[in-house]
Image (cartoon, rainbow, N blue to C red; front, side, top):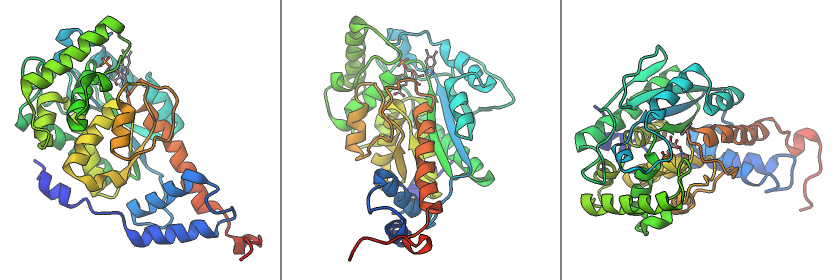
Length: 351
Ligand SMILES: O=C(O)c1ccc[n+]([C@@H]2O[C@H](COP(=O)([O-])O)[C@@H](O)[C@H]2O)c1
Ligand SMILES: Cc1cc2nc[nH]c2cc1C
């Protein structure tokens, strides 16, 4: 089992030397300073993360963590919980949105059963069930402390195995009917805001169901009384197995100087927990996109992350994060391939 404190200690600040050299390179490229906007910042941040002045992102993966949620018994989703295992099989057959987008972005897709209630078997599935879905958080803690650590450990091991084969960039993905309810509860707790500010329609519930979902999240928080100063307590009581797994992914990637692209609302709730455990991790993160889900913007504001895309997505799976891989690649290609003023014989700005 991972020693979480030791892992957190490995997450060090970005390398300032690489940051400065990357900035110096940007200032020499054939463009007015700042004209490539956020692409310039991305290239510089990537240099600091990877400790390489001219980083590459050849080997890419999206880790899709799948799990069920006991709170679905309260009628908080527009879809039945059977969709979780059904979509896992769809990911494994290559028929989901994430598969199409990952093929386009030349990213591997790693599918992990970290807590799906049903039995699932497939040669390409990583079977790492911690338990068969969480307990109903409206009535009891979603998970025990031991289970939450086990789920984080799954994420850490997935990254360690991927990193051994070579990994330059990872995207977070998830699948779990009911998981926007868990993500809303976590967000309300960590941001200390009213539940209704951070509770949205998920897969598409109506106004009446939304009002009910808000009450269920409020009930879960009141009943479990998590200690907001103890991120693992909050995660165990209100979280999900896939969210805990993604906390492990985010922490382990940062410890190995691998950048993570965070997907939508649920992935961002995992990032919120990871940053509560290890604030330095934030510098290793990119926000892939801004989800339609209510509350996502508040998480990104709290983490001082600006989304790379805003496409009105609300699918999850890692779709927005994998789309954002193209933006990061663009930032690195210009950083690497553009000629300098001296190389191209272009006159620089008058001194
Ligand atoms: O990523 C997002 O922002 C997002 C927003 C809404 C829904 N989802 C996906 O929809 C599922 C959760 O929705 P729900 O309504 O069952 O809580 C889960 O599988 C998520 O991947 C994802
Ligand atoms: C069909 C479907 C696909 C999904 N992918 C992620 N969450 C999902 C929820 C549903 C309902």
